[in-house]
Length: 232
Image 1 (cartoon, rainbow, N blue to C red):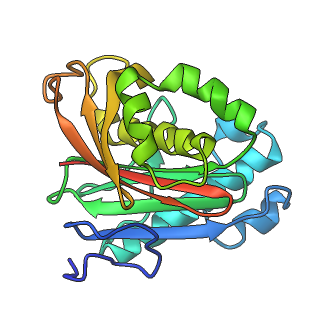
Image 2 (cartoon, rainbow, N blue to C red):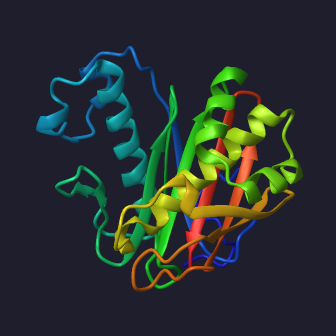
């Protein structure tokens, strides 16, 4: 893979010691299904046939990003299937993650030789009252001590960063989970200059012991939080 560590022009995060392909795509949540799918050839799953239009267009935009990211990463197969739970199944030899916010989809892909898993998450920055509710559900005592180290305009935005990092962590470790995981099962131990370290507070499967640390990165823009977490 490329030695410049970024296999695509989109890279809003601090540099990582791993080659990754990240693709983002804006979409119109109110666009017709025909306009959203275009000539992509992506088929909407049957269980989404009755979903609201915004959910359908977000799915299609995410799958378009995934196919492009796989191409940037050098994959011959660019189709991402789904398991029984509706989660992405990536071509052999690659790990990836798909996400979307209200009008932006994204996907990241890594060679399976370079990491055990990867998670990507986008979150819109919204009402501070909602962030306060999220804090009650998501933040551990250690999170509350570390959150002030996050470069963000206010505590509400910093809370969204922690929430998003934990969402990315869950995506990265999901294939290896031996049990369900909750927000309380990981804590933010360090954050500085767009980089973060999260530590597991209990064993989550045979290969995810208590105390295992995962590296993450984050980016805060005017209305969006982006996070990415690696399982090495």
